[in-house]
Length: 119
Image 1 (cartoon, rainbow, N blue to C red):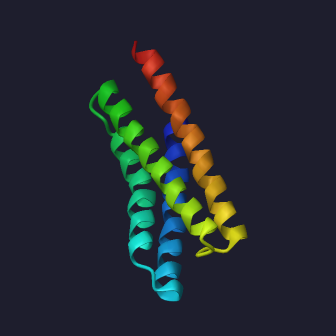
Image 2 (image 1 turned 60 degrees about the vertical axis):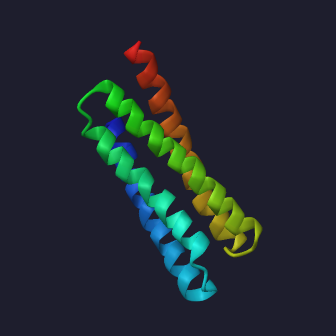
């Protein structure tokens, strides 16, 4: 699996998990504000990765991957908030946070390498 396919797959599977978190928060916690925030940022990661893969230029690729990285950081914030406020069970929150942190590491490496190679 090449780099693009790996990040596409991981970001898509992560978006599915975030969608389930959203459903849980709305159904069980009756929370809409934070649920929408985590849904927007968590699904935006994969959407921006898909746009990056179809980029017309290296600069466009870097820009879209950078946005995906920023959305990942935002999602980590919301997930930490949900965990630390006990809105999500600690074990489940830590599990999805590990996935988000892994995405952040992969995206950081992609952006750094792409910027280096673009110079």
